[in-house]
Length: 275
Image 1 (cartoon, one colour):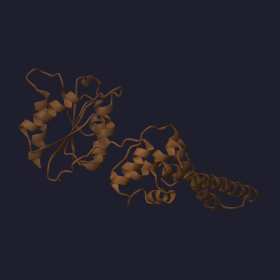
Image 2 (cartoon, one colour):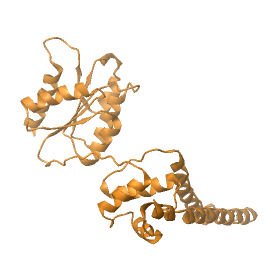
Image 3 (tube, one colour):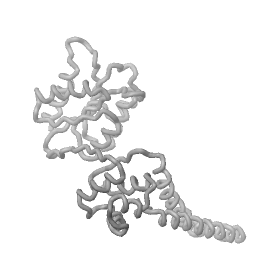
Image 4 (tube, one colour):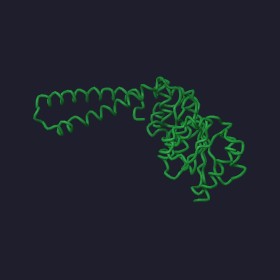
């Protein structure tokens, strides 16, 4: 986060106004000189426009803090930035926070100058308490690249656990990860390269969630196998499924002779043997 205090906030706003004035004058001068080549016109204005757009994004990011109640943190190194956002969302200045913590404003400034990267965990916990925030974390163990990984994506945890138990019982050498939403699946993809993804088709109000999962998987890995496990195969867009690289569609409530969990396991074992 580039804007970390009120002084910087208003300095950026002033810079935007100054650049907009410069842009206005430049465009006015160009309007008086129609012989100036179009590529030169672009060169004279494009950089200023881009800079203004970037600065406005910084202002918008700060303004948006007034309406949020939580922040997503990707990795421990991002906690510092989230702490700064939390302070600004509370409406506290660095001096206000210093008073609440019982330290100097200079110390808070130094902590925030490098996003708390050199601050002890004890101090981070102390500042979190002063901000009256809670920090929650999901700890994901990275796996050896040689360990086959299967990700189960279903908004019903009971379904995920049923499939997981089958793998634990029949193929304990396979690492099984669970995601109960597309958002959780995205987080897993950032840390893992799954060999296989088993996803429900319908999740919540999203009737094509499974296809979105398949498309995300294909973008992340051309070799991962995707299986859609659904109770409503009639709603599946077959063409889109083919394009997303879906290997097979397994009916949750298919023939009594076909256990869907076992069928998923068969596909996984076949995939592993082929490698």
